[in-house]
Image 1 (cartoon, rainbow, N blue to C red):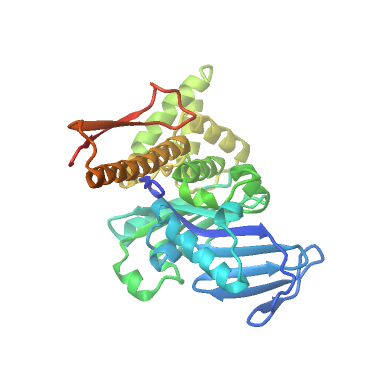
Image 2 (cartoon, rainbow, N blue to C red):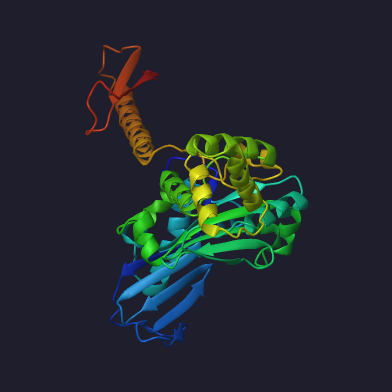
Length: 382
């Protein structure tokens, strides 16, 4: 059983792929898509129970694309939690089994696309839209492309396939009306990777088991925000002005007070989304502020952001999660064996020395004995 790990992140769209060849592929019920470019393959697609199936016979690949939160909860407005992994895994593998007649396991798949998001709730739609405006006013810092995400958000992407979206979830056209009515004012910050970015951000061998481990989500999400210069602490305008003035006085000790004031004003104007003529200086100042763990943009209502940051909070590591899962499994198996022994002892009635308590010591084989162990007292009910 997957250990539940508390996190402020959730998973939306995921695409998995397997090396696959179907000798007797039945095209009935599949939609054929002819390749649009020479370097792309022909494909056959089918939708079953919110799972999008894609078969690429020329490349000997099979893919499934789905929203983890929608598959687990019926709507992606509600968060997917990692202890729903077995539920999502079962649904996907059942669809594959019914489609091809033989199984493909998630553990043997590879990640092609992965979306992680964080939801921030605001007291009112007005506050949420002020935050969206704040995000839209950010200048481009780096070699990414920045465009509006509809009328209610901000969309940034690198050519490598790394994407960041900041948008008002309440105005998502894909959201059912009945959910939209009950959803609190929510801004969604979504990190997405595919193509080359997938290998750089998640590694070449990331499998579908990534759905089990929030520590991997948190690392990927935070690293994405850092690449778009959205890490660090969010301050209001007054505190931001005081902080950057102290930083610049330290960074440029030979500058006159008037020069420092001009640089501070440049950063304040940047925060307000105003145009700056000297873009080179603007980027230099933003990078200086970022090095001190301060988000180089101020927000008039910074106190509305949990923990004054857009980053995800730290969670239990993959190693610790696996360690606890192992102990839970070992404990359960040992208790089963122990109860069987007690029941057998009762039936045979041959045991004359019954001790009031028994102790089981459980530890994984790769952990040094004596450093990590659980002692579990078991009452003898016989």
